[in-house]
Image 1: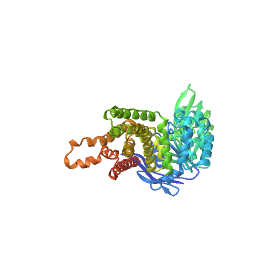
Image 2: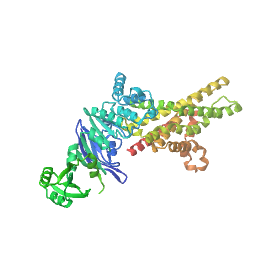
Image 3: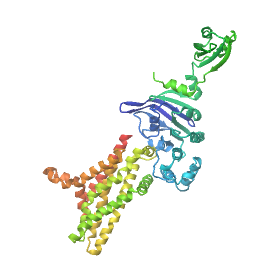
Image 4: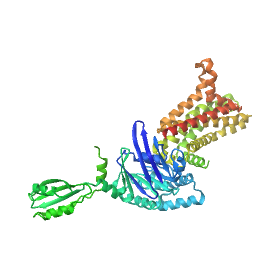
Length: 312
Length: 234
């Protein structure tokens, strides 16, 4: 559906997007993730035809942004960050205007506007001006704007930023509903959002893709060297460290100071692609220590993200 | 074409949503009426020369106020991004906005039709000169709109857009009054560049192709420059 080839964008000397390659299949919900200034918005803006790449190409179906920008714009519905709609217009007038530009006429137009009003719950606010709306409502109008032509591809730049938790859930539900049939690309720096809505996650940092795959892939990839926490009673910290160090699959052991002179806390870092938990259990079983706590730290997307995007 | 109409309709409607339209129309009517009637009874002549004489200057000050928001506000509010990601070509956007502002110039000029009507009761009015004057005034206004549109595309700050537009329009309006500064050989060229000079010709009731060509080329240049600015932004 969408093929991004060696996409590069320079703002004067500054390289915002650096040789990105990406293939997006039909019907995927793709989350573009990255810290602020990573190049997410720039990438989306090139995809939607707001500006041209410095070099490289984006092809949607068989059209290239360089030659057939208008055809691509026809296929894409886009909601920029914080929905910059025309402030002075009534919501209805605004949607009517967009519907006209999207080529809808007469009965089809009013039918589509009604559908979107129901889908995005806009019925009550149709006759308010845009600048009187709260951020969440504006975002919903923006979503209706993006979906006006029932586009095959929906591009959303930080669709939930600045919304309250209820609104976030609402918008996410709408996105997921759309994603059942359409290709959706959304950017965010809120990780739980990508986790909640996306089939595929692409992590971008400093203009480059540093991880790409579904959540499990990324967790697996970055999750190597998982951390295991153990708390023991009636054990000597040094002795415990030596015993556990010898367990197969354990990379390093860090013994924390004993609490109350009794409880020994240990942090075990595991080697990649190994699960040493059974071996640890057996090693402890062979001693007379009392196992109080035994847990593996589950890697959240937050940790992975921080690990991948951390400055060296 | 359909897209141009939609933009034209939206932009034209926008003028009347905010109070700016009414203020601009009111100021224009008051200023022109004062300039016109303050001398009209002194000269005791049934013509509109005084009204048309000041028009290049007045429009040079008024039109940039009308055009300043056309692009600047979109750039400032970020709606420019929405506009450009809709299936619209640059030309459709530029022409739509240009026509909307030109239509608004026509709306500003419309109330002044009262002047010739009043005069025609008082004396024998040369309607040819009046019609020529209005055609000229509209062309003049449209040329200034093209310049103002260009100024507006340069910056996200409406005030700057307005001042830049005024400076260019004002220069074109008065340059033929400054001819005594200019060396003989280039005199004709400078005079040709002046919008005041061409407007004077038309408002005498002589619709000459040279004047039409002049206004058409100013409009074309203004719109083309706007197109280049949009391309540069891309």
